[in-house]
Image (cartoon, rainbow, N blue to C red; front, side, top):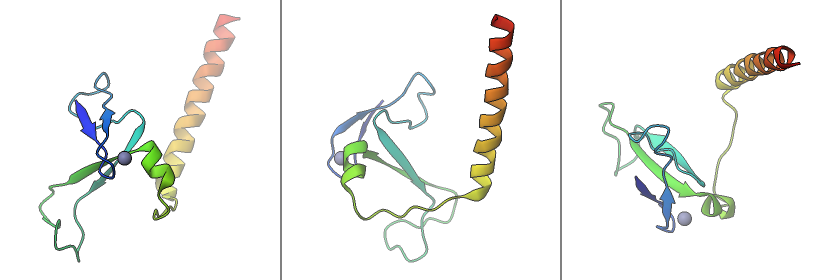
Length: 96
Ligand SMILES: [Zn+2]
């Protein structure tokens, strides 16, 4: 699947090998919204969502981004990383 950056319109490859029905840009990031109260463009309130792709270089250059941490998601990633580290250790022990 070919994707396009919302800022510059350049083509961004999708990682179709993972799941061709999922937007997974290579060299870019995807953002999903279910709409927002206050928008006069997109606020369907029925589960419909919109995804936009931003090419990495366009994201790198953008000064108007807002970052924070989702602590629940961070804990999940930390647990997943610990599990993967344990599996790698077990694999390396078995290989020695
Ligand atoms: Zn772009």
